[in-house]
Amino acid sequence: MRRRIVAGNWKMNMTPSEAVILCEKLKGLVNNPEVDVVYCVPAIDIMPVAEAVKGTLVKVGAENMYFEEKGAYTGEISAAMLKDAGVSYVILGHSERRMLFGETDEAINKKMKKAIEYGITPIMCCGETLKQREDGITLSHIKSQVKAGFDGIKAEDAENCVIAYEPIWAIGTGKTATSEQAEEVCRAIRECIAELYGAEVADKLRVQYGGSVNASNAAELFNMPDIDGGLVGGASLKEEFGSIVNA
Ligand code: PEP
Picture 1 (cartoon, rainbow, N blue to C red):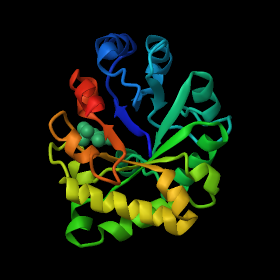
Picture 2 (cartoon, rainbow, N blue to C red):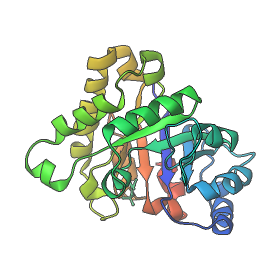
Picture 3 (cartoon, helix red, strand yellow):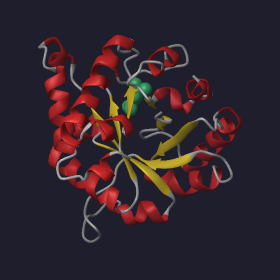
């Protein structure tokens, strides 16, 4: 039985002092021992959030990292820095990073490997545009993103990774994929992992759905057989996140 995982993606929201207030507000609402709860926060919020969630079950995640070890990469954050600051998870390949910052499958693959090397669990995002869905190429596109992201990653590492299926047309739009649409793609992701690594790894790896998850649609989505939780943007900044975790 796969353990559920609900991660908040705060994106570019919350100053460090606002972040601490939000953690306090959510404290009593998200402490569910049956679910892994992660706050993926802006780099500058990582240390205050790590301090604010001490003594709770919440884990801290980052929203991005660079694949090089260290050096002349102005503005970037390394895996070693994240690890030292208390980070356990990192979102990689979010569609906003792919589209706005030109992140390629190749770069995401390098980041996956570096995160794994440092014992940070990648939450690798994949998802199709509305045009790709309308053109009927959703599943082939998702499979190619998954295969590229996991290229060269060993089975024993792959099984601990998380994949977030996030249809781009559903992110921040209020439009959610139906539970059937989300399940179809999450099942295809699991089949793709089975093709790469075999059924045992596919059965262990956790797949999340993300895209306008809220308190009213979370339970239905999370009850689908291949959906092991969610990656939540907007609603992770509100008390509503507590209801999503408990859904
Ligand atoms: C996200 O950006 O990861 C996301 C799922 O956003 P939202 O929940 O706001 O659609």
